[in-house]
Amino acid sequence: MTVELFPSSLPVASVLARKESGREWLARLPALVAELRDRWQLVLKDPYHGGSCSWVAPARLPDGRGVVLKVAWPHREAAGEAEALRLWDGRGAVHLLREDSANSAMLLELCEPGGTLDAARGIPAERRLLAGAELLDTLWRTPVPPHTALEPLAVVAGERATLAELRMARLRSATDGGPQGAGLDGGGLDGAGLDGGLVAYGVRLMRELPASAARQVVLHGDFNPGNVVAARRRPWLAIDAKPLIGDPAYDPWPLIEQVDDPFDHGSASRLLGRRLALVADTLGEQPQRLAAWAVARRVETALQAAARGELPAARAILGEARLLADHSER
Image (cartoon, rainbow, N blue to C red; front, side):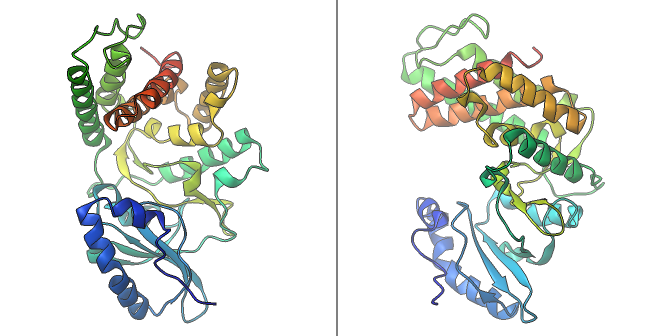
């Protein structure tokens, strides 16, 4: 059977083809993979069809052991993954076996059977939610080192808050300002049909939450159920971290949102409250704080959609943020 290492159908190929630096990296990728294959004596298999910023494929070592080769397009969010994997050392995450930092390449533990937590639909949603929360708790138990290159959440969240404000200002300018929002509780809309008060609340949370955290942990940074994989040595292991150092309450929202869409239910607010409480209790966190970070992250996502011209989607996402705000501390 012929192995096709670089099919055009790979998401990474279509996504990075839109960027000049991405196109340059894609052009170098075949030679880089060949060099890594020869140096690490790998027998490569067809790459995984997932991920938009890295090329990832299962492989075999000369002794027959299964591994995964990951070659990332160099970018800020991926810069700390190898360091975080070294810190976790297999406790809740895949083992880092080898690294080529100059080429953003890693050889990783292969998870088998390998299905993801979001695909495990035979398991009830709240059981999957608990499994993910327990895995997060394991990751957070690794001490934060005194010296680390991992970025502080406070810095990243502050930058995102500023970008959200700039995007909101541009939207207002493009729509001739329009009536200003009446505030989170007033429900007023600006000229783009977005709740300016809710956006301001989310931006304020992005800036204030990191400073009020009771503790600092090594965050996964992208803990959605697609990044939780079934394994033999432990039921589930984390992959594809975008690690940061900061408030643990930042991490759970993608898990809660994606393990089973809570907004796709008639009693969404009640379901959100129950799931926030369930995860918070498992992790020793406050449900209100988990909800506050969720508001901040939904507001950021809404402004990203609006910046792409997707205003109906942005309004829908802000509607979700408003439901979450009812569960947060104001």
